[in-house]
Length: 460
Image (cartoon, rainbow, N blue to C red; front, side, top):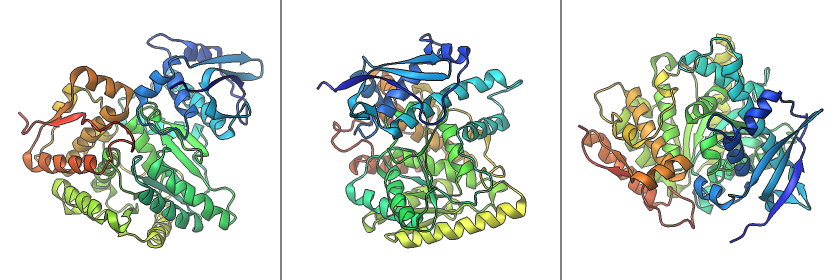
């Protein structure tokens, strides 16, 4: 089916983007080391806000004739769009939200790739440098607000959910908004959009005009989870590990709604961090929540966590079923504890410097067939390393499901293989089967899900 397109010259929303000739040339560079392909992919994803798709590869192929060019002018830059999706425009004018997101893409891609070149001695292999990079990207995007009291609730959950689960996430967001709390999500549809939509109503009722709806994403996922239009602060981190670190550094608490492998990855990342001894006394409220019909889902998640990581990991979260008011009250009370602790420790409200993140959670994991097969999925290691390796397994499945590079690998070489301790790998297999049965792997209406992974038994 032919998608209506439009050609347009677009000016930045707000202040003009000022780029050096070197930065402009890198964005235009179509070679292996250039940024053109990355920028084009992210720009196309933003222009498809509201489109029901979670297949980045299919999106790129459907818009093979799309092009974006930088037009350098004395007072800044404009973007020339060729064959852009027409639904991003109204009467020939681009929607303001999409225009904001488009230039956020430009800002973050240019800035992220300029830091290693402009900061003397910068080394991506140093944990402190990784955290500093996350901080600088967030600061450059205007996400870090000095003086603002803790009020940022991270909401995680599936992009592929039914109407009932979506409505519940919206109800929780409404209650958060009524209590003056703002929202951070992965910026996409489903349980990422619901809390933001609910919070906008809650904020409107309280006449809160500076409500924040922060969307944090990364280049490899944005095509599968385009920013929903409620996001008013979009930030693109270089990879999933830095994206996850950004969530926990600038968020003050986490709510988890039902989801699939991406949500499981986020849960294991968070619990792996909170299990570190240095974080034992650090307040960080975490709530798992859903409707009554989701009670069995969270029983499954809880059982999996206790089996894999132990009861200490399960003590890091509360499970609240079918009670949006209690969820919001728990978060509000948690914010007060966070504020008291940060003030006592003289730590910033806007960035959690004290949170200890083991380097194993920071270094990028490339989900190849070899790396997936080599994951150490066994119990003969500390609990936080079990969490780290399970997180990587889920991250690889996410890549195989929705990321362009991962989809291509599966098409070329077949499913990823996972092996390990049967007491760990069998519950993992059972949980993955439930995700498939509950349609949590792909959006409703997609072709029948074909697993991008295969459980092959004990490791060697």
